[in-house]
Image (cartoon, rainbow, N blue to C red; front, side):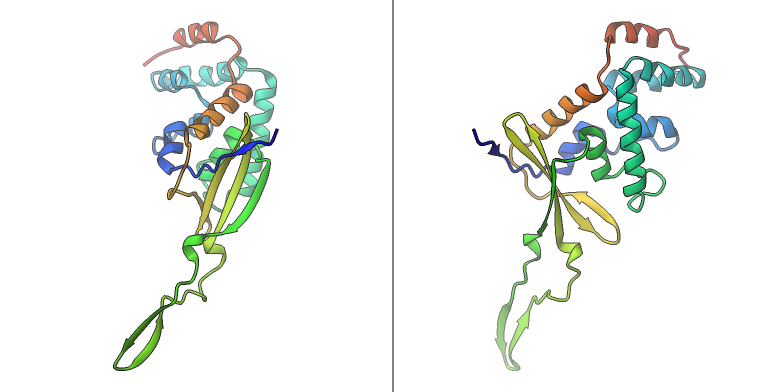
Length: 214
């Protein structure tokens, strides 16, 4: 049976809701790096802890997960720091492509397409000086008008993330159009649980409650 293709061009606000964009802390490097894979209750608990409590939290965080989760995280962060550092040198994981990569892993396929908004439009105007061409954009930077499309399988569908290039070095999630965007968050939640899921949440929460609080 052929998979039904769903073109999902997610709004930045959709990914923001899923990942917490705009709330990413910058002073606590550990928290900033792990923020996007943390559960909501972990974020709330972490903010209420003392400095000593946060150090203990960081140990418990990975003890509550399978060892392979830490291995996957380290592998993905190493890739992100190598590939996406030109977009954000201080926090390369805090970029649109890096957030998607950290949560979902490498895409099944990456395509490059010409941004249709870039297509040259020629308008003719006639006046006393004669006919002239308007809107000729043939000298524009082609790379700046290219869309990078990441493809992920989800159930019987495909989820497409579309990024557009923003000079000088940033790729941003396309905010223009989206369809069936609920599959974006469903995919991310699934991969978050499968890759970074907690083994025994009740026991883990009890340990967090016992940490030194402010």
